[in-house]
Structures are given as C-alpha cells and as structure tokens.
Amino acid sequence: MKRLLSLVCALLMIATPALAHRQPEVMTTINYTGEGKKAATQITHRIHAHDAIQLLATLPTVSTPNLDDTKNLARLALYASRQFDMDGSVKTLGAEIEGNYVYVYQEAKGHPTLLGSHILSDFSDDWSNYVNVEIDGREDTSYVFSKVRGDRVQPE
Image (cartoon, rainbow, N blue to C red; front, side):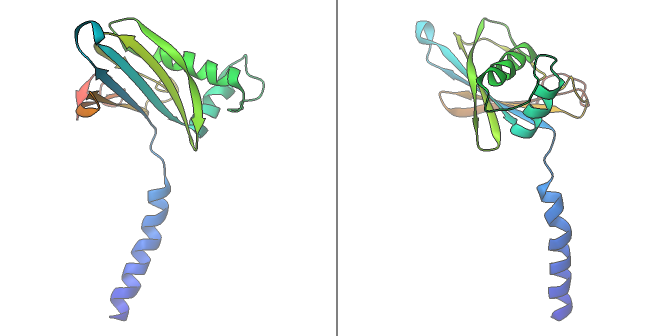
C-alpha cells in the first residue's frame, strides 16, 4: 500500500508541471444569430495576456507593452482583425482585458462564412487558432487553423 501511495504521489508531482504549460493557441467563438434581415454574427477572440504583451513588444509604435493602455488594446484589436478572415464585412468593436486574457470583439451583419484565422500564427508555426461556431448560442462546429496541420480549415 505504501508503494502504491508513493507511486501515485510521484506521478502527481511529475504531471503537475505538465498541466501548467499553456498551449500556443487562440480561441475564437463565432455566434450566428437570427435569420433573414435580423441575421447577425458576433465574434470573440480570446488571447492570453502574456502572448498579447509579447505581440505588442514587436510593434515599432509601442514603447511599453502595457495592456492597461487603451491604445495598446486598440492595436491588438486591429491586429486580430487583419489576421481573421470572413467572406463578408466584419466590424471590429474593440478589446478588453479580463483576468489573464484579452478579448477582441467583432460583429457582422448576416452570416458571413469563415475563411481563415491566423492570429499569432505569423510569430510561430506552432500556433493554432481554434474556432468554435455557434448557432443561436448552441455549439455547431469547431475548426482548427494551423500551419503545422497544413494551414487549412479542419473540422474537429
């Protein structure tokens, strides 16, 4: 029994650091609502704050990469809008920091089709962009955009 307990404790000590490691990923949720003239799309991108600060540090217009600065949040929102592609007109609303994440908000009229999501993929081939598509708040489909996987839409 002592051996089993020792083994379990050893495994937990080994597994704990592995659980703490963040994966290089951006999460996006697209929510299609309504139909016809009332059709609308809400888009939310979630970027880890540490990754957002690293991105800001690469921009020549940023002297201090600080997420408390509204101009830096606007820069992040504009960057995300350039790296996210739909076949319709998408309006970027802004960004906010909440906890360890920066949230970038966008909207569109109608239900434009997702073409690509490459947020932070230009910094490393390891980055994946996970996109969950919801219809009226219910999950419908999930996609992954990744250079490692061939940089194309892949249903999960």
